[in-house]
Length: 332
Image (cartoon, rainbow, N blue to C red; front, side, top):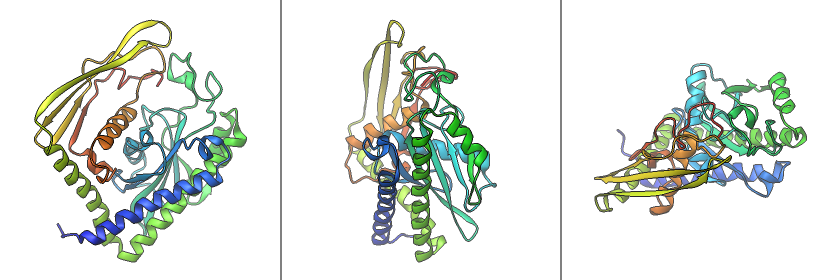
């Protein structure tokens, strides 16, 4: 593998972090709902052509720590059928890598000279998505269908043209279409800014060179995380927390995690956690990964880049059918 210039690597890292911040500025200045402009309930991030998050900024870490799930779900459906000017949307936690239904994810491919190079992405909490209660949180939900419209990976914009039939379907499934229309527009606009800025970097340094450095950002974060983990003592630690309700009745809902450190790796094993529960406090697998990422990222040195390279030394075991990785149609 080509040896990377550490100065150039640092410069490109700062550039793509700044791009994420610029995407966030677009969101707060153009969105219609206070969920974006005031609560800041969104996250902008960039990913490689393979779907690994290479940078994230300006928002909620719980959105983007598992953001790669969404892009890889998209690639599973559309790989080989992604074109310049396309924009995709998804939300479902079971088939689309979403964390929960209100967080719609807008994904724009970055294509330079006919080559898929990256993705500019925005995941943001909508004002309303239908379902059994206004405002996206239905505390009486017993299945995901009670929580609102479920979005698999779908092409919302095709080669620069909005699919009006799909857009109208989304608006008809919101109690606040006047807010949702503007917010989706803000999300689409922010990803255009992100994609344009990435294209500028790749044209400046060369596509092949730029992609090598994007990969290098992931490798660099992985190396830093492995060094940080190595400095910890070998061992195994167990923590238990939880809830005393499944949203409908009093019941013990333990969340147990065993953290094991061996050499330069960490394993987070949630075996022993409660089975999935009747109510909407189940955690989707993307959300569980994000939660672990937030814990790890805030524990170690903040100079470790917050990308998916830093997750490579970390293994997460989340038993299927548990409260941290439910089976459908459990609400989340």
